[in-house]
Length: 85
Picture 1 (cartoon, one colour):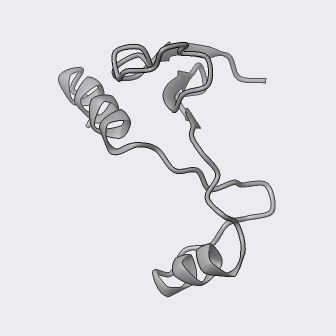
Picture 2 (picture 1 turned 180 degrees about the horizontal axis):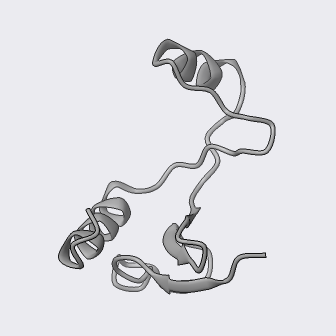
């Protein structure tokens, strides 16, 4: 199983979380992949139809999550500053 190497971008507390315990996050794994923690949208026909319209789908071993815009922007900035984007 892959291990978490580091957080990408700001911490949940920096984005305004009081507890920091259950907040969206982007983490890098030792495999080079990313673990994304976010909220599950209402999975069902609405999400499935929207994805299909854009030529995307969710595999049986995948889940769609929603990240706040600032969380993803901070993660992208972190990767960009390292020359990884």
